[in-house]
Length: 230
Image (tube, rainbow, N blue to C red):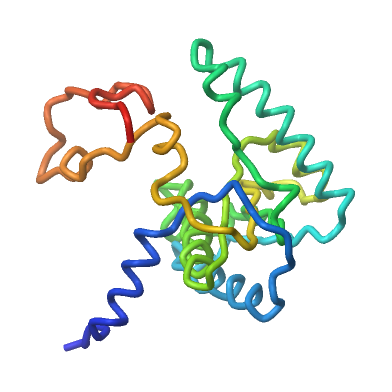
């Protein structure tokens, strides 16, 4: 029978999970190259459906390109605010990215020619995206263990980012990752601190055998029953 980690090792794994945060505030300073290599290797050891390894990671080292990426995010931030209607002003008060301050900027994308991979994707083609998300989560947890913050930026025009990075047809950017030093980690998720939403109770998300009778499942994010001070 396989043996579990010892108590200290288990505690470290769960600590990384519970203390991981989507960070938006960074302090100046580069990331040590050896540490960055460990983070990228952690991402590359993520599980993937059919072992297709669909993640592609672009490290942004050109300052002008970083600024162009920031500009496309800013345009989409304003468009998102307008689409939120009554929550527009509330959204505009949120800090949604730290692209100019972080030590490293990474763009994670789905590779091209994914249609050639059938194993695990015939009925669920989106499993390539799920695999990329696993790679991002691996990096996120490793960053927390290294004492580094990471933020996932998803507010951008896909075609603009694809063009800026000269991606081939079929490739698709899915995340702009801000990685860097932080003064401290948020005690709770930032959107919970800002009263945007709160974590659902585990019992609301775990079912047995069948889907329960619909009650609050259709409530929009941040407006579910019971949402209030975090």
